[in-house]
Length: 454
Figure 1: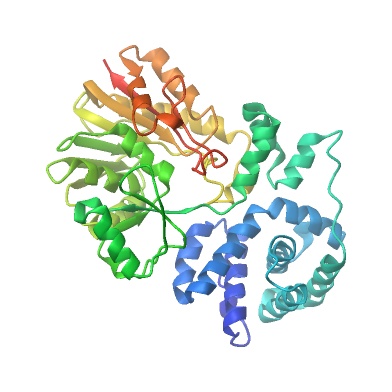
Figure 2: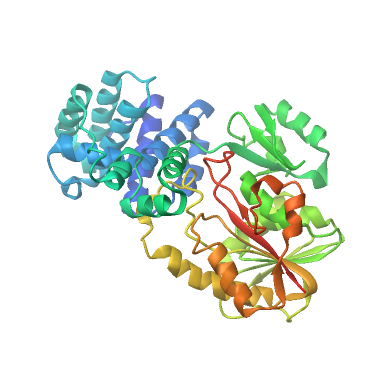
């Protein structure tokens, strides 16, 4: 459903961008859409400045939805599930702007919210209600709940996270670190790309990116990692020529942790949408081979498209369910990567809607799936070979507990602590596990372990 498309009049460009943001928020809420996918589909229709605004409005509103909803209950004096869905999306976005963005005058936020409501048939009858609530929000702010006697309820509202998630974070990291983590979760993630060094040196590619108008920022840990000061241009010649791929630094570090030799054969389990697959393809070179396995056929098609754009011809794709069995012969491969499906608790900056969809039982549920996949993936590793198990989650159930359970039943595998001496040493703990968090170095929350078969 495209709310903006049903509008009774053609909106001006400024209003059109906000209509698009409301549409995305509506679809995330009502149709269980994913913000990054919806943004990717709509942003090409807008100029660069509007793209930045739409992205900020969507991701910011979703990140702060818990706190915004807490205040909307006070401002409206009613339960939010009784409010028309499009009108609720409009008010959420409007209140986010009033409380967290200071460049837009308050009267402009109110006027825009009402204009959007009038242009959306589903919300038109609620335009007066939207006007009243937004105007009240410019005059008063809902009081925060007291920190004592219920500190975790306070933290849930103050930092806009579900209470059960707050409880887990406090249990895992203690209160002060949990607060820093939740603060970081609500910030925008850095714009990181992976340079395709198979088709040029770092200096050569950066020169071409600069010519395409990219705002070059800081270098990353690896030669192929580059942090931008602005968003990457996916309509640039550099993008079409396959000179880079947008991929978080922590995600890139998992392939680096596997460290396959040039010319090797690597199996990338759960490979879609292909970021790590193509990274491995670059690392092993044209004489090597990556076998990309995934159960999601659509995801495999996306991975194949990415490999084609990056011009990697050393990748084969296999559709198979690794929770049942591996599609290759046991003990046949030197290197295996299993970046397992997970809750995504480490990527709340990029996917803030995850906060409001996850359930307290999800980490344990995913751990059961991850354990089956690790058993089957590890069976492919020959003696002397290695497997990296990784998840973009900070939940211990999905990280070290999966590995510990695996090692308890597979005495021929051991943690490779040699990775602590390399480029990742500052994110490797005493046991040899890679652990990253947004509040520690600005990296997405990842867990990874390199296991060798003795």
